[in-house]
Image (cartoon, rainbow, N blue to C red; front, side):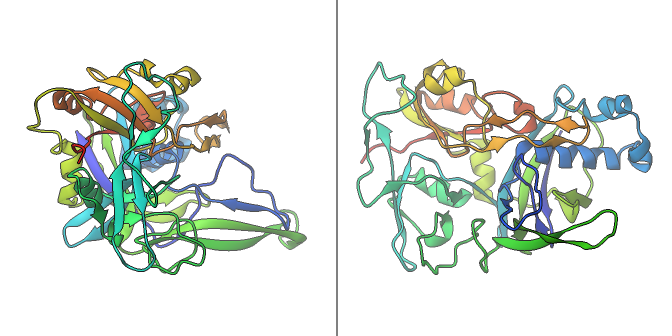
Amino acid sequence: MIDHFVIQSDEALYFGPPQSVTAGDVTRSRSTFPPPAWAWQGILRTQVLRQGPLGSRLQSARPAEVAASVGPPDALPDGWSISGPLPALVGPEGWEAWLPLPRALGVARPAGTADASIAWARPQASDGLTSGHPGPLVGVRPPLRLLDHGWISASGLERALQGVSSLPPAALQTPRPKGGGEAWPFDPDRPAQAAICAAKRVGVAIDPNTGLAVDEELYTLTEHRLGSDAGLYGSLERPSGQPLAEGDVALGRGQRPGRMLVGPRLHPAFRSLMAGAHLAGVGGAPRQGLILLLTPALLPFAQIDDPSSIRLGGLTVRTALWQAGPVLGGFSMVGGRPRASAVAVGAGSCLWVEGTAQALYGALGQRIGAQTSFGFGQTLPLLLPERP
């Protein structure tokens, strides 16, 4: 049983990094976008509890009762798996999820509204290539660049896999150049008139004894605001149970109100990618492909140093182009204790692999690293177009 859903909110949301937000005139903290997997699983498990038998007495429920329903703090019940979160925009064809821009996709985005040029980077052929650093790459020349971060729409990625050399501006969200004034599809890095944008909030510490503001104890939070046509997509897979129901949800710092839409109409391009339609019907000799990391992965250092040690079914991992990842941590509300901080490999990282289209298709839904049921290490296998 899989429940697909989109979460929306009219409030500015803050999913903070693993640090205390103490007041002070130099205190600034930026919300993590999209929310980290630990926050995401907390939202979903709380929603399942609220809609289940414990909903009417959730605050007084014993830990053993909670664990019996949704698992202990650091694990999910057997057979449960959470996907997302991915930013999503709704349009005439339904909700279209946006995916991390593959680190191996070179982009040149000119000023104005002209189409962006794209090309796939490939490592130079080498049977012994197993280093965590791929070395010289071919297929991407200036002005194309491999970007540190960005987003691509599902339909944009679908076209890129067909071998096109350019994409329309509405299919990409890339780091904005200084002074740039374009209207990005969404811009989580700064305040803007966009479907998803940053929102700054200045607050002041309150003395708990007097209820009055404390002198010189200001702080600044950069939160994220979702427009009416934007949300966060995810899914919850379980062997059985009561289907998720639409309703109110509590989100992030301050438990801001939001709403969950269950069973939304999904964009055909996103459904096609997730189903592996881009891999079906392609046979022949082994070809080069990519494994795109959709969410941060908790990998041991040995696998980061030597990606060939990562096992992905019938695929041979040649090398990887890693994306810098977030520092994860925070506080476990259920466990009542801080989480240990961990450094993750970032979403958008790419593993170059060799194998048949059938082997790539078999990698659909596979995850890498630790705590994958929480949503870490989600991947999408891609078959690169033939070289021109």
